[in-house]
Image 1 (cartoon, one colour):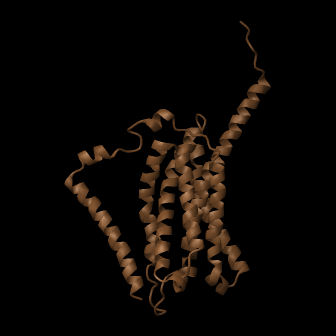
Image 2 (spheres, rainbow, N blue to C red):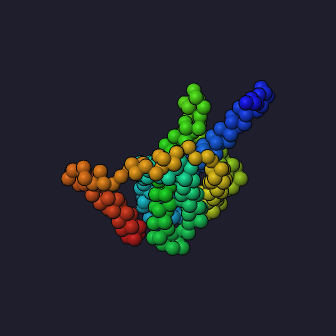
Image 3 (cartoon, rainbow, N blue to C red):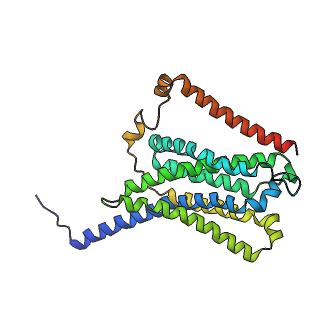
Length: 274
């Protein structure tokens, strides 16, 4: 039997390649989180600039109909996004979940960036904005947990906490990036230009950045095993829930959907009445 000796430089090279591969995976996984939180903060920062373009405006002393509720619906959809994309990550893989998450955020930001004004399409403008905010809320809610799980799984032994911490770093990074874009636009455009068309730039920039994150994530290696993804109990199963659900649980679920229906109906009625 012949034993092949492995030189120390080869071992060091292999270790360096693994470290470089992990760094690339962290950048790809956390880039989507940065983009998604940038888009989420951008809406909050630019709402005052475009509310008069998307919502009907009454008297100057009246609040604009629906703007606060469209902001709130993004937070309302986040837990649903965490549940949905958590199931996708378990049943279809972490990579697929993260790719779909950033793709959904790209669609939501692009929709806001090219959204026609209320003066052009009437009540359809706030309705489309509502759907865009729902998409963004789902995306942000599903992004955080899945990406944090992925980075902890690719981390070397003893580095899981450090690798997972990049989720919070990119969360704050997204906020700082949104503020930086605000400062740049305020220095280059007048207030009238910002209200007329400049408010679209941050969302179009966010859509392009999401495409870059999507490209980076396509090269990610899957960490969920095939056995786990093909397990019938991966993610969730509706049968146990249906068999074990009590009447009070079904009642709360009915009340949740009814509240959502009333919310959408109220927004449409308030917009149509002005």
